[in-house]
Image 1: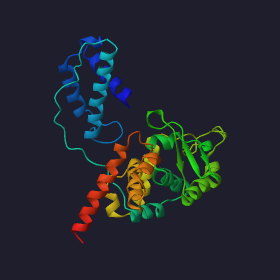
Image 2: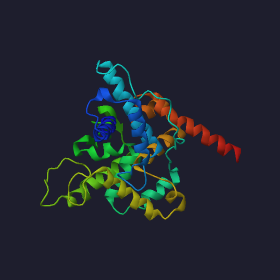
Image 3: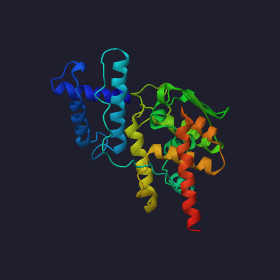
Image 4: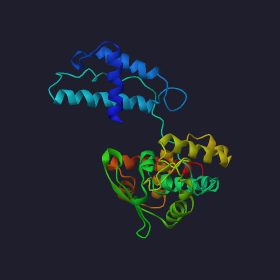
Length: 277
């Protein structure tokens, strides 16, 4: 996503008649910050989240650092005092009981396979859409992520329940979604209703419909996304005694510091629970 953020900045300065990256000043970066604070979100109603705004600003710092390293610029206009933006909002998670309710709300085997991929395998949304049939070896109980974050690959161990849900969809339901107009040998594991590889937004809407069917107010008031299911399984693994190293490898984190966030949140939650016991 870093190049996409940098590209949006380049479009922005071109619209301000700046055609040479050497001419960008700190004021242009501040104007861009004000722009992304106001521009509509392209995926949902409202504006960009605070975390996405941070992502844009961090991308600019990386971009201009690269230009300095390459000798194209002598200084960076993006190294400014910290912008006053709101407090970071942590992603919400579901409890194990709520996960069971989500499974019960699935209408078909594709729904269950989606939850199995996002929660049972801890896959990112992009990893779910890129998943191919050949990436899963059922007799070995493994799933290979070939193009994860930063292009890294990893092997995910599969539980018996996850194997069952993925296999039942693959054998009994996926063939029904291959139409005469589509390629019968399409590699995508998940198929949309016209038999092609679904986009991330399509999978997100699938999850939203499943969550709505639970009719559980505790679930519905949380802002649950596919990535929240990934956070949920990480927390549940730690609750059940998994090591930090296992969670890091399972989720494909480059740095163990990222996995430490789940441990920190878990400890905070336990302290609250103990306080009210």
